[in-house]
Image 1 (cartoon, rainbow, N blue to C red):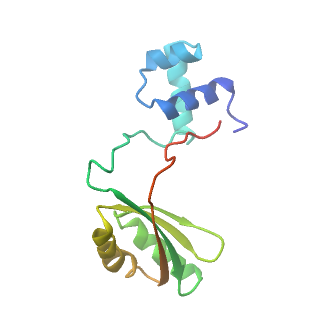
Image 2 (cartoon, helix red, strand yellow; image 1 turned 135 degrees about the horizontal axis):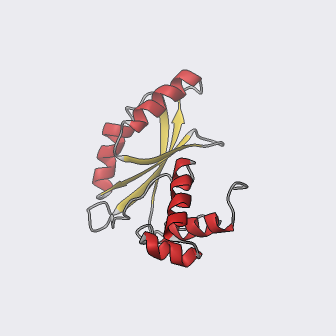
Length: 153
């Protein structure tokens, strides 16, 4: 973040809360001309500080009411097993997030499904057949307390 000045941070903070803000409104809020703000925005994207834009969808309304986290333990912790697992996970659209972690297991997987029956199908048809999977532990989310916190810039 050393490359970011106060205005860059302000632009990023505003965009985290309102990614659809008009360029003119963004410029006004940071106190720059629209041209200068646009140049900064393009630089922030080019330099990888902004990785994309998208809409937040309501999973309940779309039939994905159950969020589940799954600890995944692999049978071996070798580079080739990691690579095969990662490649397969990236090809599984049902997996929303997957993180390699330090500790008592290897990966933490996040998915959303309709209900527990749909999760059981996901587990049997998608997750357990992934390369190297030895064991899983499932954590069904009872309540989402906070899921849209912006980065504290």
